[in-house]
Length: 429
Image (cartoon, rainbow, N blue to C red; front, side, top):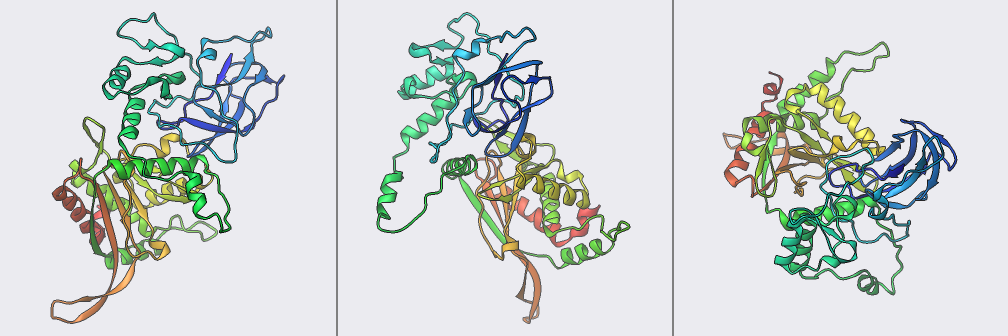
């Protein structure tokens, strides 16, 4: 039986095999871990799905493997290895290198943790076409390529087993229309030929971040709304709640609420009050969600990931706090499952703990909004009688996708969030 590189997420096109748990000749049983893979987001163990003997390991430790590639062969009880038709069409792995190649194309396939086989039906004019050189292309992709004068022979397909699909043509069309403004590696290095420097190869995470943020800035029409928010009542409520938290026999409190826990809850409730903003851009339509699934940005070594707190509007502050901490811990250990960081309707990026007063954040597609949170500070404000007093404030900036959220709608969402933060008792009822 062919063992294939599994699909681990909607946008994951490849992964790195970091460890083999079995050697050639070992017996394997269903459910036993065969190998470990690392993507740009997480590390995961892949189990065997059939019993037999590990007959062949085709991909060494450290190789970068595209989704659908054959990585090993398991022989059945008789010692015979069954070969599927995928062997002639599956992508081949890349050997590890010091300087990784250009980012892999984004894929938008459903999550598939099990190996799969492709069964080709007889080709008709409504099915995928096989071109010269063994290229397989869907009818829509072929039509789009003709309209945009795209040479299919130069396209690497991101569909199952290398099939060229519509999104591949759309990416090629955007790349063709965009002028080559960015200088190449050698051109940049030449500028520093007389200066000492070290070259840091890009790992999967950094390559994906670079690609996705570049696409987000180029394709999403951002606009930003900024205001100072009074947090005196919130800080007092937080202190009182933490002081009243039950403790175990060792004196450890059951929870410890952070400022960010209140921010997540307030944003989730604000999206329920302004449901038109609880949405995502889906190409030819807008998706509006029933629940507020809020992503929380977590900084990692060399990157960033945004695990999602699902239905945050339904959860208590203590539950949000516990879930956020647990997700952040596993994110830093690269142990998140794809379903824990994909999707969502908005995100919170908080740099206040670094002393940052104010900043703007890039929207994480397909989200329509993102909230950038600055540091809590004591600031002087003018009173109604012309005097001055010091109050606790933080500066927050709401980033909006103008295709989904117009200015007035963004202001309405911002006002709902601000009202909840400044009157936090409303989050408890």
